[in-house]
Length: 146
Image (cartoon, rainbow, N blue to C red; front, side, top):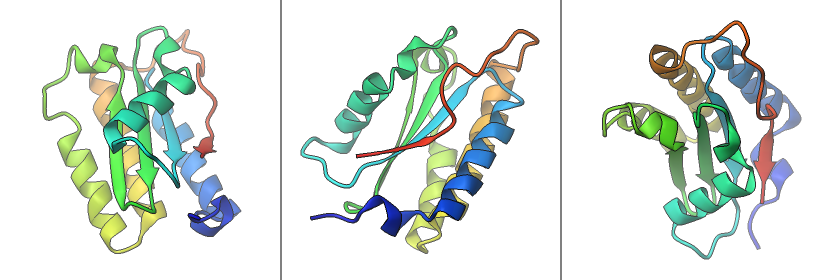
């Protein structure tokens, strides 16, 4: 059986990551979520898409949700952006962010990698989806697990 939630991120780690999400979302109407997956029978991108739907990330007003899907057991990291993002950003939009996160993951610096990736995502999304006066937090700022 795979690792349990408490063995991958401590409560302190979770708090740090959630604070990074909240800070990043202050500059953009985009919504960022993290999902940690310990066991998956699907390929990682398909599983990330499935989780994206399960978390109802496609229900944001501007279709600008972003999921960081982490599979520690399989050493995999996938980013899924909703169609509102993918329709207006270059094809390589996520490559730099993913490369930076993976670089930290290879050193087992998971929290640092996620926080840097979240920060970069917030900055990148600000260009296309700046924060608006009437913005609401459409998705919970939390880390989900399965």
